[in-house]
Amino acid sequence: MKKFLEINPLIIGAGPVGATLALALAQAGVKSTIIDTCDPDQVLKKDFDGRTFAISHGSHLIFKALGLWEELSAFVEPIKKIHISQANHLGYVHYDEKDSGGLAMGYLIENRHLRRILFRAIFNHPLIKCCIPHELKELNRHPFFLEATLAPEEKLKTPLVVAADGRNSLTRQQAGLKSHSWSYHQLALVGMLKTEFPHENIAFEHFLPSGPLALLPMQDNLCSFVWSVDKQYGERLLTLSEQEFSTQLQASFGDYLGNFELVSQRWTYPLGATVVPQLVAERLALIGDAAHVIHPVAGQGLNLGFRDAVTLAEVIVDAARLGIDIGSAQILERYQRWRRFDILTLTGVTDLLIRSFSNESKLLGNLRMAGLRLTNRIPLLKRVMTHHAMGLLGEKPRLLQGLPL
Image 1 (spheres, rainbow, N blue to C red):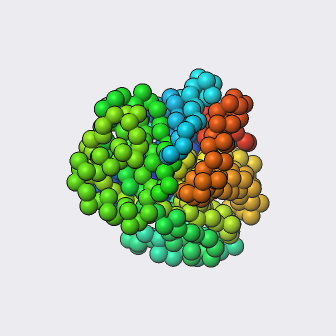
Image 2 (cartoon, rainbow, N blue to C red):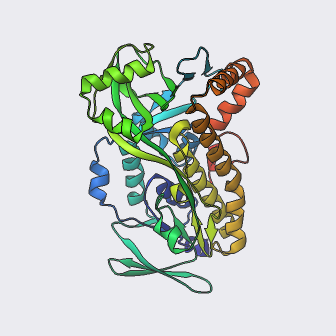
Image 3 (tube, helix red, strand yellow):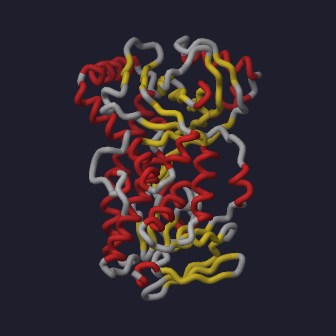
């Protein structure tokens, strides 16, 4: 076991995905080092920034297995129903707990609460060395290890570097791994609002010609909104008063939840996607947004990253228990093969959704509604789609099943 504990992979990026990998390894007794340039005090004291995340049922099982769900559960709101509709067309798709086997279809949590809880967990774990704030300055390759030079001045030797440093990953770029990115020429306009009528734990996705509008159930009967709009319209919406904006948002969504009252600032984030053909290089693996970026229409981007983290953790732990070099090409290729289909499928589905529902063709509109009605009438199809969104399909790593490594 001593050899097993001395593996010490280096994780670059202490966001939710990088932190989850470190905690998954630590649960199995594997030490790791995690570095990030962020200021810990800023992370721990961060106010609401407009971002909320949908934690899938599979991700919820990960956090239960890691012993974090009890703390997280104080800040989550379950999704019990999902309602999908299209502007100017009759019909909709409605998912509820019958389609999910009686389970919640997901849980909503603010970014700041998720980040803070995971951040504290990595700082408090004896098997995780946190070099924060530190920056990776140089990475030198040797036959059986990598030597990382950090600033402030420190040198580390590691058999494996994991890049969890986001969509503009410098680690990925320095390794020469190519990526293909495109913009949707849209902004995600986000914030929090209060509705006249209770949300009843329903997540709404309303497709408008300008882009999807999502209303997501939060605690205290508030709703988080994610409104995808073109840049010019988004900038105009930011200039409206709170009352004018609330009225415009309610008019675009409809009367189902009554009148809206904006209870936060408004923030915007650019929308795009990135595909990375190779998730691994010599003694390097990519996870999270360093490995893929998708449109938030399905709320699955972060869950995709969590699946990266626990898959890589399982591959590392299994190799270590067999005494195999965790940074070897065969081990990293196992990770890449395991993740490729899930990533490409979800990237393709979200891209297709955005391109098809943002098209104002009358013929396409009728075809879309026919598809929605058909989905509503086929229980098996609804269950398959629900279980995929919940992270319950395909070959699942042990932590995604709620089992320890």
